[in-house]
Length: 311
Ligand code: AFP
Image 1 (cartoon, rainbow, N blue to C red):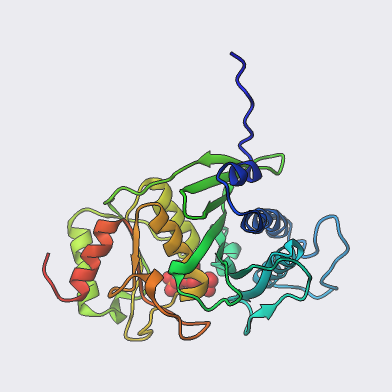
Image 2: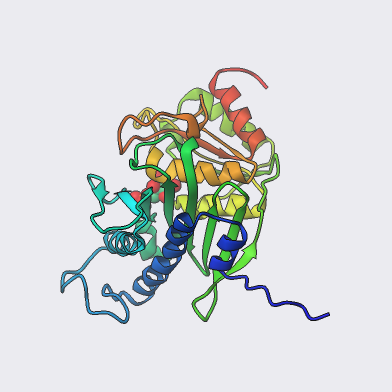
């Protein structure tokens, strides 16, 4: 029996999963943009390979460049009306003609300060079928992240499974994991924030984890830390409220909602300690929230500790 060659490429996967064409082209273009970002990161060439230097002679920080690359690729799709980025003070309405049924929020290069010490960084993308970027995360139509590490990998979900693709030497994203699912519990924990500034109930939760032999895995890069939990089967990441930052550090629109969407689609859960991240009504574009995200059991245990309950 001839084995019909089924391409494991990103576009074929999006089509086999019956993803809306407009949504699929946005996800695909994030993949295209990530290749230019990899090139800039690897070569320090802040122009765009194969095109004139679109950005003039000025030296652009990588996160600003990543933002420009993604913005241009998304505009090019004609599928995006409103675009908001952690790197921009305000959202942008694209002028280009097209169906423009979607709005997109991005953190173009999360953890950018880690590039100089050669640690993994990432791009985070949330996609809404809406003409506004201010939405609760539960209304996401899709989410993507890209990890720029020893390998470049792209993870997406549109609500029917979580899929990972790896960039090969030919510049193709090839399917490397499908329908990724977290275990209900797993003994990895990833904690941000200074312990001296954390509240007692959070400390009691950390002590619980440590006394139950959880292994500490923390890189300082949200995307890489979440990717590790997703691909190693679970655990918990937290960046809590602290006495210095009472709303935590991570941003609801650009970082937490897309990651919470992906983790929940992989069977996990994400909370701000009191309620699901995806149900929080955003009040401002740069709103921050405490976060407990990963395997459902660990997040629910965290919520109990934060309420002062014993487990
Ligand atoms: P940068 O994007 O400013 O490097 O911050 C990265 C980040 O937002 C997120 O990726 C990490 O989880 C978190 O900050 C790390 O914060 P700490 O450096 O305080 O641990």
